[in-house]
Image (cartoon, rainbow, N blue to C red; front, side):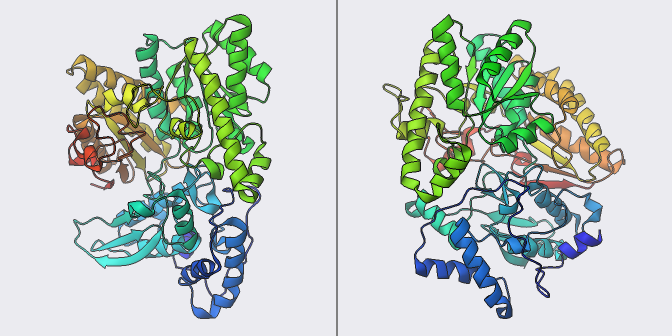
Length: 591
């Protein structure tokens, strides 16, 4: 408690904390290459120093300039807290309102090394999904939240706290914007420049809004995707002995292995970086790990034959894995993969989101900063090889879909054969998972409904699991068959989740529900808090797959058939069934 009180006391200035630099024991973000001019470097330094009194500028300017030149951004490593970063029970946070304490809990959960992809660079997931732009902003926000009353609102702009403003008790306690850039100036190069200057930040979907609950959120969505892919492409609910091949075990992609097992199939996930692969294995999310393609093929055959669910992490490049699966087919006529996708961070292809074959991880990280042009060329060559193998396996009967990570978009830009003959601007040879699989679920009014038990007590989470399962069972009994199927899938999830060590970081849970289920679950949890069956308040939040969440023409709105994929107004009418309960960013139920 005293450590948290000190953490929330503002920027540590007198004396300055020691500068330990980067911690070699945690993964770090790739070096950025913003290519600033000398004048822009000076501007970046002025922007960073604005958080500090002038008497510290001489000391800090030197090290901030070094960070900018060495890493492409000023993270302010000196101010990275030494306290263990995690979601502490809500009663331990110094605050004047529990709504503020709930936000502090969620922020620290986003930066927990067990949750965050690059914790010292304040990146939660996706390679560049920031919670804040630097550590000064973290300290100031925690201080403001500790001072906040129920008649104040914290206003945030791309990680920068604008301050506490007077408001009504019924007003939001925080208003957050990230990455709001005029379209004509929103290129990748401009973004890198603005991020280096400290004036804009990419908050992803739930990093900069403090709502991330670890990869569990996408375990659930991926489980539903795989189940419904089986129904659509394979004509079955029973995926035992079926093989799903994909890549990525870092941030959200780390969920794929666990999702495959819960869906009942064999999941083979390639990952070039040993650190996240080992982390997922230690967390129990990946059952087996190998760096041998021979062993991969053997275990796929074993699990297919025995119809045993398996999650196998391959330490290597997914292109090598796809090409080996193709070679096995060409040699034996045996198609060892039924379903395929990809979850590399191709929204960020040239700065660590995609590691090309044949470079090692170390070689790629070095080349992307020393020779970006050559690295870009190698990435595009790799994408062409990647697609070539997938196309041949697809022709043989494997079903592949795009997971909304810009995989097909970047492959097309690289010259790979993914164009759909006669297709529209957002259509490719392979469908988006929203278009073919999840869109039908969204059209029924189902979307993500998530909660965090702020006590940190697993028993509270177990109680809320039971509450939710019972409510869904009651509603499903009187629903139409299409709606009942979605309720059954979510009952299956909520029943299995507790058995599969889903919790990473905060005691959190996710499910998909429509408006009726959300309202009923929220009210029941609120009553459980009042009755003390749940010992502390519960945070309820949403995700980007919700109504009014995201206009993303290569994901949420991909291939909308009336041609409105690029129209931002679309999301307001895409899922009309949901009411205001699904539009709330974060609601704290304290009764």
